[in-house]
Length: 78
Image (tube, rainbow, N blue to C red; front, side):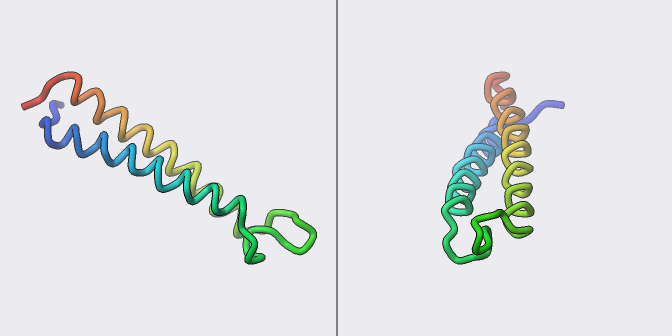
């Protein structure tokens, strides 16, 4: 399958955007002081684990999508 140059750049940008957004989210999750991510004893809650799993999944998907975009850009589609 050949990707257009436009689609390739979109996928590459989407992959990079995903990393920027989810790294920021993970940092904020780790520093959470609202009591959602960590209980009073400082232990992670279910909220923390679910959102950490979402962030990790998004890192993986962002990497895959970005890699596909990068390969398309390097191939020089029309």
